[in-house]
Amino acid sequence: MTSVGKDSLKTQRTLAVGNRNYEYFSLPVAEQKLGDISRLPISLKILLENILRLEDGRAYTVEHAQAIAGWPKKRTSTQEVAFRPARILMQDFTGVPAIVDLAAMRDGIVRLGGKPETINPLVPVDLVIDHSVTVDFYARNDALFKNVDVEFVRNDERYAFLRWERSDRHRSRGNAFSCGLRRGWGEAGKLRSLYSRMDGKRKRLREVG
Image 1 (cartoon, rainbow, N blue to C red):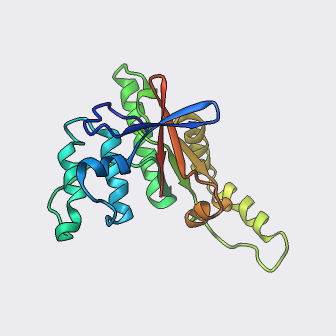
Image 2: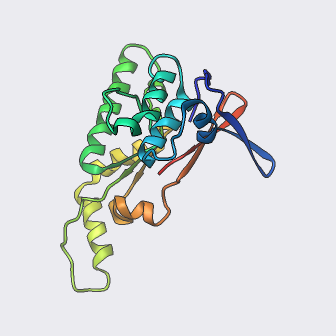
């Protein structure tokens, strides 16, 4: 994930891994400026790191970081804070309509004389087709393969569209319904838990979960 570069609290540090250097934003260093954050819930620590990394003085500010750090005092807050995840995991009921919207926006940009590749998710997206299950064959060793074949024939247009999405969009992956459920993807290690991204000549590090 990219940092805008304010780093008002000077929390940016470098992690050397082999012959590579990664930039990250340290919560222990932030604690020296913001006060004790050891009792913050993990979810709020994730929000805090997000603000430190993306600080721009507008959507992500030091005041937002201070509000999160001060949460344990009253265990409540009226301060709204922005959050940009490192990835998005979608299932087919909501994910396919979102991909349709992206395709429509790309088509609109082309009609206006623009470049369709400018319409892209800001973060990596995984779309897992985990609800398309119709049982036509059962009680036989090849039932899964038979049902998969029938599903692809029955919904050929849908899967042709998703194949286009997978090949044409830079930051999203579509995964067929027979590859597992959303919750199983994380458990099986098919989804990354650590993300890095080039920001100029520096590589930024972001942990998920």
